[in-house]
Image (cartoon, rainbow, N blue to C red; front, side):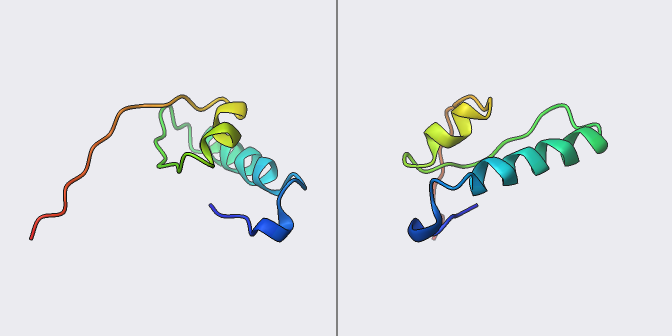
Length: 60
């Protein structure tokens, strides 16, 4: 998810996360993972998400 800087602080991210939570409930999901930038992390944490440790490697 990305909200353009000019549209931030209007509750758009919270609305999208609330809609995602509703969809998770409807589908009876019990676990979800997302990848976050450091800038986005506070938004997700406020919505109840918790950090995990992940690693990646490009294979050439």
